[in-house]
Length: 265
Length: 237
Image 1 (cartoon, rainbow over the protein chains, first blue to last red):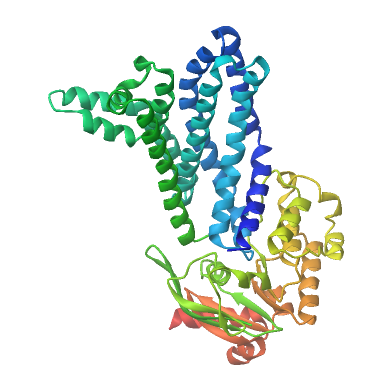
Image 2: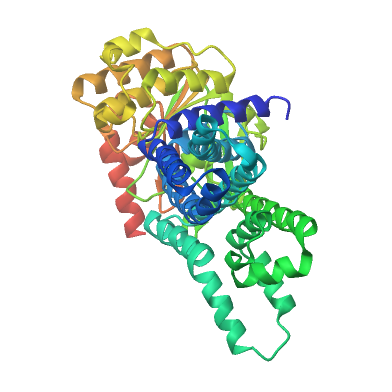
């Protein structure tokens, strides 16, 4: 193991260089820069700009990470093969691929969102800004792991892309609607616990509740989030949602690592 | 040098390798031949650990290879398809491989020069033509002066001049005592280079031995005819 960490860093370093040079990642950073700056200028200061930013972060970060990540890994397939023909462990290559994907994306997001605040000053919104950045990074880690899992398991890139977009649609768009639908159908049953379970099962919901618990705006929490906030309250809710989100990083990553170690290249 | 014993591999219901044995003798050029989809690339990739076999063992220098892949430090591999990260340059790619091996990459200046790659080293790999990529691919295989070279269709996509350069390089490496494995369809070039031949048909090893022996056995003058003879006999049987 002593020699495998530097090797992982090297693979990651080269992957990062490759990702960071991609026009998509640069556009991604510029997008957050422009949106955050506009919200700050025209939305009336730090806190309100961040609140408006939440929905954009919950929407865009998972989408870009999972779609870009899946495509990137398909494009890196021959490169992966090349590296695997060298005297390195598969685990090392896997770690390098993951870090090489998520680190540049996370940096692009943090730089794009953070820079306007650095220029205009954070005011009283410093804590909230850090929360938004942290949750954005966590979402990058979650959807990067899902992208890896999809790209490793699905050999056909068109199918992989379909799965990636499907996963994003499910988590970011239709999930809350489905839960609401289920709630209205089973309106007579006690729904608190199923709703909590439904929320823990969706990383975007978890991210939303983590952020909106800070803003204390129940109206924006969505159905599952409102139940969650009521059930757990502030600090405890934050800890539980944070832990669940970390589990959402670890579980797909572990599955992807297993699939990677058994894969034929 | 490298041995495979009882190697089997199926992709779904399709059996690609069916109990394959191969003993590659050190200091010689072994050709792996066979029709399309005979399992040549799968056999090569299994030796490298890129494909996980269902059954069988791989031995290098008499010892089973370990799962950490350390044995690959003795192997230079030229894959069939040369595709690289788009935004890196050849120079960066070679540096990365050097970093991973933990040894100074001795770029074969002579090979780079004779292949006409000197002016291409700093261009992003995505801008290189298919043939140029294949040349980069060849340079990579010879990068660390490995004891064992595994070349999958090494001259495919190369112009006759570059193809000649690569063949000369293979002959030089053999003269330096290195072991070479070549998978190829081009029988004339194998006739030129190969000492031993391994014939794969439908995932089974039909013949494994010196080229002269195969020619004597089939009473044919060229490798191409000898292998065709073997295939026809197999179909008839």
